[in-house]
Image: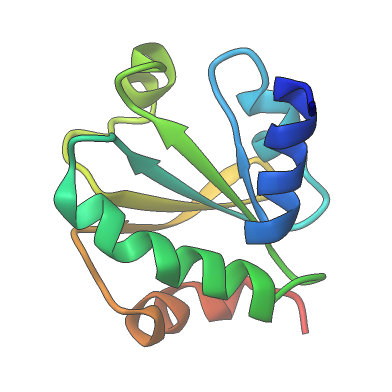
Length: 122
């Protein structure tokens, strides 16, 4: 039987999207060497579930140029509030610890890529 930690790591590897929260947001997002696309979501949010496959596809297709992370707003209210996330789904792109792009509402993969691509390394 796999431990919960092993299952989590396997799930993250499969989707290329890491789960972050208040305890590790600064380390995994703000201090990352690559730009990080952060998906602020909640389990009850239907539009959040609709954009999740797009975020996962971007993480896979742009691997090596971008990282992707998910923040559950219900479990991480402080980081959500501190970043001014008022509605979900909201995607924030961080580069060198600074917010570079903010995408609110459900969007398709191509629309998301158009917003973030100018900030990605070649």
